[in-house]
Image 1 (cartoon, helix red, strand yellow):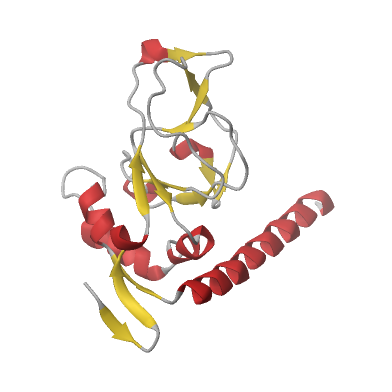
Image 2 (cartoon, rainbow, N blue to C red):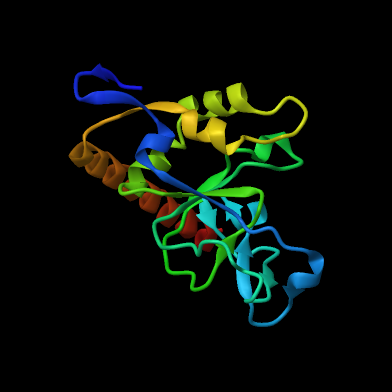
Amino acid sequence: MLIRTNAWELRKLGEVVEFFSGLTYSPQNVIHDAGVLVLRSSNIRDGEIVDADNVYVEPTVAISRKIRNGDIIVVVRNGSRGLIGKHAKVKKNLGNAVIGAFMAGIRAKRSDFINATLDTQKFNLEINRNLGATINQITNKNFKNMCFYIPSDIEQQKIGSFFKHLDELITLHQRIEKISS
């Protein structure tokens, strides 16, 4: 699908990013010591990756794709409908970490731009339009078929950098407010 408006094109998300799935594991695979970190919805707060209710699995079980700096992780299935679409960009090397089965990973050339796109009202509308009727989820097929206007590569870089800078400023001010309180 290709619709042009000036330099922006209406594109399916699956045409401009690479998706990867999370790890399915059983409670018997969970360990409490040095294992492979499995990021889940509880590890995303305010668009950031946080240490919260961490789960580690045996390295031999962690056969899914490892998370890289710049990847975006998105909640695609959850008991709470409001958590669908919650996402965060990975901003540092997390070692051998993977995502859990109820998550989707996105790898993009311009991840700052894609992450900013997922912060828009348009993404929220797409989620509501594509949510399952009985199960709170976005299927991979529906996620890949979500359409967004995408600018040229250089514009993506500039827009992504702008929003990344804004996010950093907001985070800095939040830290200052916590220290001041």
